[in-house]
Image 1 (cartoon, rainbow, N blue to C red):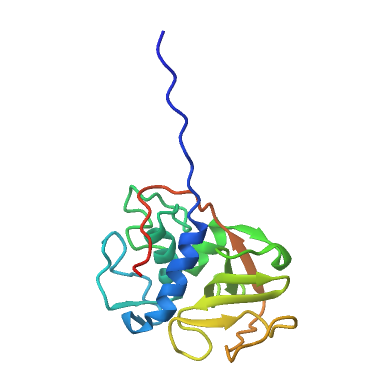
Image 2 (image 1 turned 120 degrees about the horizontal axis):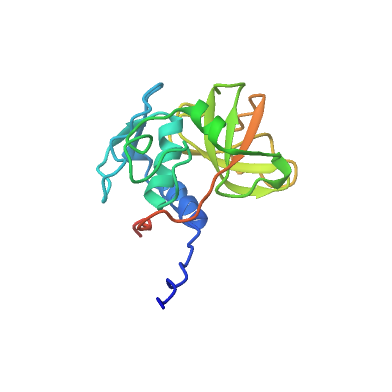
Length: 186
C-alpha cells in the first residue's frame, strides 16, 4: 500500500499581483509604453531587467507572471505558448471569466472597447462601481498610472484621471500560484 501524496497548499497570488501593480506606479521610470508592443522582454527573467517597453496587455500579463499566477492569456507558465511573449487584449477577453462590474475586486482586469479591445488595465481598488486601476498607456499617455474606470461617485478622485471608454468588460482570472511567487522589492 502506498502513502497518498501530501495535500498541495494552494497559494493565491492576487495580493501579490496588486502589490506589483502599485510598485510599478511608484517606479514608473522603469516602464515605457509602446502601442502594439505585446512582447515584454522581462517575461521569464527574474530579477526583472529594466527598463521595459510594452503595451497594456503585455503589462497586465507581466503582472500575473511576476506574481507567480497562471497565464491570463490561457497559456502555461511551463511552455512558450503565451508566457513566451504572445497574447494581446483579445486573448485576455477570450480566456478571462466575464464578470459584472459590481463584483469586480482588486486583481481583476478591465478591458475597454469591443473585441478585440482597445485597452486593458488591472483593478487595484473597488468599492461598488468606484473602480481604480493601474493603467499602462492609459488616457493620459503616462505609464503606469492610477486611473479610474469611470468617475467615482463615493470615493475621492484624488486627481487621478478617468478612462470611461465603453463598452467595459470585467474579467477574472485564476490567481492561484503556478510556480515560485516573487514579491516586489521594498
